[in-house]
Image 1 (cartoon, protein in one colour):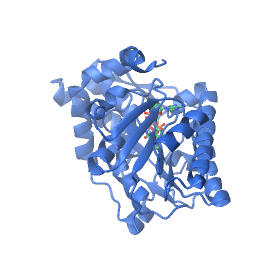
Image 2 (cartoon, protein in one colour):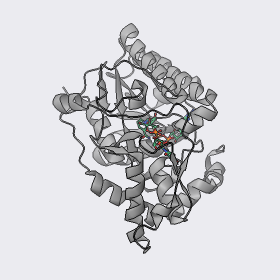
Image 3 (cartoon, protein in one colour):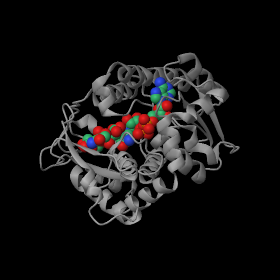
Length: 356
Ligand code: NAD
Ligand code: DAU
């Protein structure tokens, strides 16, 4: 029988995937109240949620997932029956230069949410409950030229970021095994689409091309990533939430593998046309740079279990998704300027006491 959420707590809803999920979920579930708990770090932008900020079924709380008292209060006061946990430090390069915050937010933050959720669920205030951990294919480590990650692939994370996500996934598993808590856990490949912070490859490329800046390609550019449109991810999460058996783990992927250098060339060429530049001009910005430490060579997801069990498949073709994404960035240059300059933080700091 389908699980129908009535009051959902989204953590990290001001980030890239969380904000896209909120837009999609509110449109599809008008009867469910959405509370967004976000600390508004450098990656959290309430500008991503302007069109829902006054929606009667939406509320924002500025706060830290490590704040147990705050989490407990929200769970109780809002009679939360679903936690969808996106909040994280998400950038691999930052985890290499400063791992500590990744352990704090991704491991300790998840533990805090789990423990407060356990007490809330066991109090019986809500008739049914789900704790949904949003995770990444990076917990499986790296692949050679062939093969795919399945849900049975052993976890073998290689970066401080992926190690912290794997630690969180293991805690989620433990809460299900130990307490019987109704958890869900998905592991998704690389997302792209609107509201993607321009430190990540695709929005960084678009932004740098617009400003005729160098395009840094790590190593030989032949690392492989599987790309999925963020709105397809949002629908996959909603599908798993409503239909999966508690305790389940599902992979989510786009069946859409690309060498980094091919993505770089594609984005260059699409932007030549849109910016009225001669064919091939943008490729001249490509600059091969020193490789990322411990750079995983290839990710590829087998998402057949999600298709077979729950019928989910991506709706976007990459051709349509990347064209729309580029057009979104060109039409939203003001958003890019705001989030890269940090200007939005000053504006929202006045309303919520935001930190930079
Ligand atoms: P993001 O960096 O864009 O957003 C993270 C959000 O979490 C921000 O709004 C930030 O303010 C918030 N946050 C950070 N620390 C917090 C704290 N202590 N308390 C409350 N909020 C806090 O990340 P994203 O790319 O949207 O990723 C969301 C989730 O999806 C992460 O868990 C990530 O591991 C996972 N994921 C991401 C991808 C991807 O391609 N981006 C793919 C698979 C899985
Ligand atoms: O696979 C899912 C993961 O995808 C998520 O869990 C992470 O949160 C998300 O950030 C993303 O991680 P990646 O490291 O794959 O994404 P990023 O955009 O940082 O890099 C994509 C690839 O491009 C990777 O092989 C590194 C390379 N790269 C990246 C940047 C920023 C470059 O060559 N140059 C760059 O400037």
